Image 1 (cartoon, protein in one colour):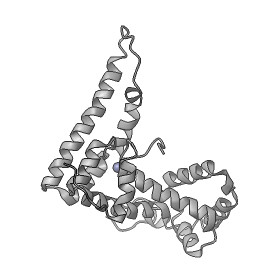
Image 2 (tube, helix red, strand yellow):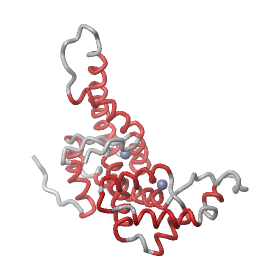
Image 3 (cartoon, rainbow, N blue to C red):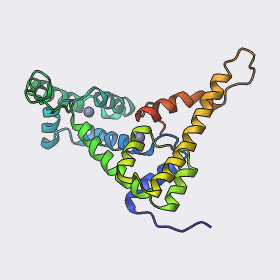
Image 4 (cartoon, protein in one colour):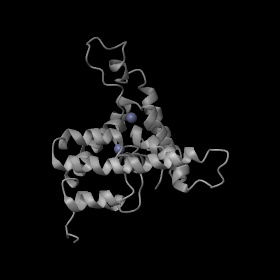
Length: 231
Ligand SMILES: [Zn+2]
Ligand SMILES: [Zn+2]
């Protein structure tokens, strides 16, 4: 019997994503969407926002999020290159004052402060991740929502499974999640297995779509990174 349940407002985006046939890690994807939306709105309308300018100026940009800005600009040609140029000029003009120096081995006197360079978007992503993990953890304690996840194509990546363990380890819910994840990982592994097996020179059967793309999915699920944009 299906139970009726009312998802909380913050769970809706998770459920919509999971039920849309999305085949990657929902936490990774929602983190990425949060950062992508922010990058877009900064380039679109917040170029002159003094608070954001200060934070970009102080933290510079990490390679990952520089790549993301590049991608957003490529995907939305209407943004043009004025906004990004204003931002980058500002960062360059303050280039020797970045807090990058404080965190580098040259500027770091004290041991134990080993956080690597965190740019404005890194921080945003870290906060989004914390929020998304806690929403997902709460969803996974709900039987109906866990069933939706179980039946979906989505798989939690390995780093996010570890993070989920931080809040649910030792509970029966976590046992269930591990069981669900094991099944999902096994399915993915079996696609890799048949992909490998079909490389036999005697084989005449073509690869299925799942087999051909299994390595990309595995790359994402193992690393917790969104490599190809599936949306
Ligand atoms: Zn993930
Ligand atoms: Zn960053």
